[in-house]
Amino acid sequence: MDTLAIIHQLKLSLWNLTYAYWKTETLYSIRWWGLISLNAIGYAIWWKIVDKQRLSQLLLFGSFMAVGRIVMDIIGSNTVLWSYDIRELPFFPSPFVHDFTITPLSLMIVYQYNPTWKKFLAWTMVVTGIITFVFFPLLVALDFLKYYNWNHIYSFILIILMAAMSRALLLGVLQMEQRYHRSETIGSSTSLTCQPAMKPLNKKGDHNED
Image 1 (cartoon, helix red, strand yellow):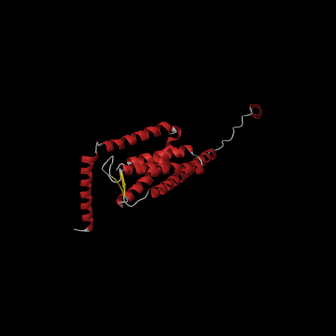
Image 2 (cartoon, rainbow, N blue to C red):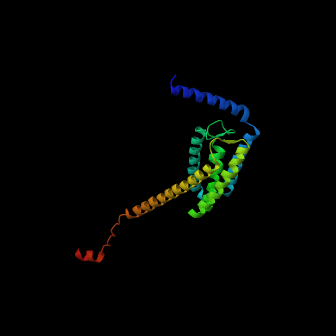
Image 3 (cartoon, helix red, strand yellow):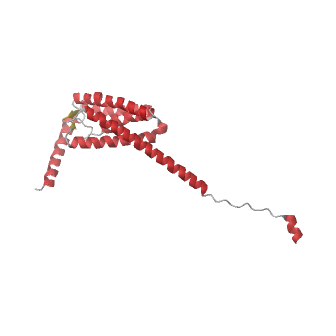
């Protein structure tokens, strides 16, 4: 049996064990309902205070954050730096409360209320500190999350870098939109052709010529 076939068999065995454990030990347990409730409460609070007039902009920022967190979770879970013992769904990684809820929703609110880089970075450090040094340790204490070769300070640094990159990307997208919109407006105005005014006929002069 070649290496790829062995890897496939190991993945299949891991999936069968993971699904069986999730179905018998996790699904509909008190801690599973706790995760579901945490997701629902997080989105309800976010929807209550989010600026609906800037929703597309805020969602784009949150999407950048979610993508960064998913990449971080894929690398960390597959290299066994940490693991999620309680998951909403039986998949690696468990993205909802970590990648789609707590981090992106919290930092979307930070982005909404802090228009300057200085304020944004300051509040990002505060909120990220709460997430990584309060919320994550709580998940570890309640056996939702396990760290094997990882430290909270690493998550703190990486999330701040993700937030800064997400804001920079978003500002770049907004500037690009404004530049193209401005160029299209100028181009449409200059493309109008000027029609010469029709000179009115001099009826008296025409009568004399006849």
